Structure formats: structure tokens, C-alpha cells
Length: 483
Image (cartoon, rainbow, N blue to C red):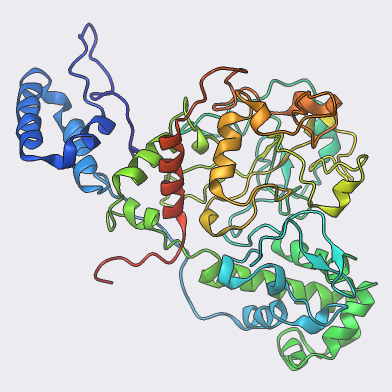
């Protein structure tokens, strides 16, 4: 579908044609309150335009309707996941998801860090969460939201491997990618999947391939639920009020097999996340706008245009905004990994050690690609759905609101002194959360990072506010008029 744009209308010229009148969608928004004079002027311009360029009028009229009303001139049908009562396995998973007795402290469950009231992310603004046996141990990264993960593919490097049972050697694939030119990220262009880049997987570094694997990790993490061994987890599962559900679903023999008991328990948690629509509701204002059931404000429309503008914000270069050809709603991520060079967060206890660096795909929590240093500093691109509900941003929680995030993108290269601290000599410590030997991994090619020191930023202050207004339309729970 055509996304809103400030591109000159008509968007193209016939062979040998001359430029027509400069009719931009933003220009329509600036007519003062669509006064009577403005409407008359518009009618005159469009009448003249129709005489000269009749073949382009449908596009121009669609843009005009969109600008005046905020409606999507080309609504689509979205194929949302089917809603049905939860299966017995998913109901069991829901019990486990909220069960605090499975933690060493007896006070922490999956929902403690993934609150349903906050889009299954943390319900506080701490950069990292506390856990451990006494709920006093700090984590290393803010827990990402669990929403919109149902379509996430397993971690891979390079092109989709397709349906194959052959094991994939990630180290070999990564070695083959060494020296390969980094693919450009361009809004509204097809993702550069053939490039040898990491993609898919769960957690910030992609070390889990399935929701089941992701659920198992926190159980024995010493700074999270902090069980000493898997056997400890199994013993706690045997003492739960829902043990009979295990037996009914998986057979009575499950109680005699601790590893299978844990595996099936976390499989159930994964099924709960897959089946329960609250994890992928697709009820945002933007979804309804795509379907022609809601209208965007002028600020939201302009924000969407900038979001999709490859020379401006270029957000859609990584946070894909268009529905798929199969009607699947966009989840606002290409599921690839980027090194953005966000500033170090001194509020994370681990960062008090100047020798500690969280480098994402190449470690320290992921070990299998530690030698593939071309990926140091790369972290998973998260979904932007429900982004306005988040209280911390990026893998280290360094920012706490969308204005700070947008300023980082806008000013990182043009005014780095506004983003990074200075050392004792007064020098700006750019990319200070990544060892200098890996600074070449940081993206400087894609807009808005393609601006140079001292140049005009890609976005104005008003642009930033309009993009934020658009991102707020990605929050679930929007009520359509008449529903």
C-alpha cells in the first residue's frame, strides 16, 4: 500500500514530461484550518491540475482526502491471529507464568518482569530489575517486552536457511561474513536478508531460539529467579497446585522425569504466549487506520511520513511499518541486529567496573559467537508496538522517554557532545559503551546517522514531536468509534 508521504505529487513524471505544480501532503496540512478561502483555492488548483495531468488525479485526490480527514485512502484487510479459548497446555502455562513459588525468593514470577499491565514489560523505570534469592541482585539488561514475539524466527546469520534438519554452524556462517559490506537499511525497501547479518532469536542477543528456551533461562539465572539447579525447579513444580494438570496433559510418568517436567512446563509457557491474544492484540490506532476504521491527526500523519522517509528519520528501515503481502500486520521490526553506539548507562551496577562491556551478540552472556568480533555491539531490534508504554529504552535502559530516544538518533553524529559525556581532558567520549576496537561496527551509513559532525540534524524539533505522536498510535487498546 502507499504510505503517507511529503513527496511531490504526482510522484513521477511521464517520459519527457515537465514538473507539475508542487503539491505536497504537508502543504495541505498547513492551510489555515481549511478556511473557506483555502478550500476555494484548493478547488481552483485541482481543477487546473486535472486539466494538465488527468492521469494523476487519483493519486492526488487520495493524498488530499488523507490530509483533510486523516483517513487511509487505501485501506487493507489485516490477518490477525485467530482468537479461540486457550488450550489445556496454554492454561497450564498461564498458571506457571504467574507462579512466584518457582523462584528462590518465593516472590518472583515471569510476570514480575513482564507485567501484563505494561505490555508484558517491566512496570517500573529501573534500568535493570532486581532478583536473586533475596531480591537484591541487579540484572544486566532491562527485560524486553514479550509482546509480538509469536512470529520471531530462530537466530540465524545470512539468508533464511529454509526448512532443513541439518544443523547450522553459526561460527562458520559468521566467518564467511567477515569483510562483507554492511547492507543499507532503507525505509520501505525490502530488508537486506541476503546480507550476512544476524537476525531472529530472542533476548537482546538472540541466544534463545524459541519461547520455550527463553522461559527456561530466568529459572536458574542467579540474578533472576535464582534456582541453584534444574532439579530445584523440578522439585518446586512437583509441589504446585497444578501438578494434576501436568499429569492429565503429559501423563503420570512426567513426575519421575525432572528434565522432561521442566521442558514441558516451559513449553506450556510458550503456548500461553502464543495463544493468548493479549501478547499480540493488534488493536492499535495504526492498525485500525490501516483498515480504514480510524483517522490520524495531522501530527500523526506527518510523523508516519517522516517515519517512512529514507532520508529523514528512516525508522522503517529497521522497524517495518507496512503489512505483508499476505495481510499480516507489521510487527515494527526486521528482527535484525544493529550496533547503534548508545551511551553507557552508569546506573547499571555492572558498569561500575570500567572493564565490563555488554557487547550483545559477541558476549558476554552469549558465548558461541565471542570470536566473531564484527558483531560486537549489536543488539536485537525490538518491536515498536506499545513503545510509548515503555519506561526504559535500548539494551542498557539508558533513556527513559521517547524524546530522549529521538534526540539520540538525531544528534548522535551531528552534536555528539549532547549525547555522550566528556573525559577529564574535555574530549567527548563517543560510543563509550563499546571498546574502541569495535567502534567500526557502529552504524554510520543509514539515515539519520549519515549526517556528519556539525551538519544540520535530519529532523527538526517539530519533526521529532510528530514522530513521537505517530509512535503513540502503536499502543494497543485503541477504541474505534461505534465499537
